[in-house]
Image (cartoon, rainbow, N blue to C red):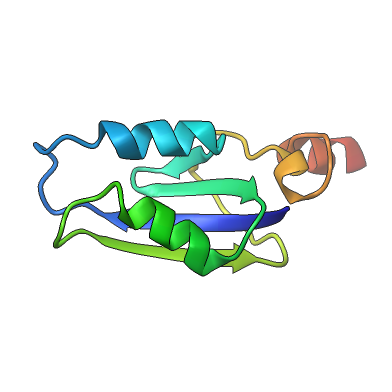
Length: 99
């Protein structure tokens, strides 16, 4: 399993993206910003990109990056589970328990 960040640029939000939503749900991808998801799946970035590209419309853009280390963030939509990055606690819990 590897950790990936998925960034999408949707040109026309009025289009149907149900297949994209279903695939992200199947991957247990966590939406961390409006068009950014974090997931942990087996495979390579190009394989994930190709699977997701099949669910978006021409003209939309996608980038998939494999994460090797965790970054820093603020203002996310959710708490990122540390298990996504190899642990079992929420990242925020990790820092609060160290204090």
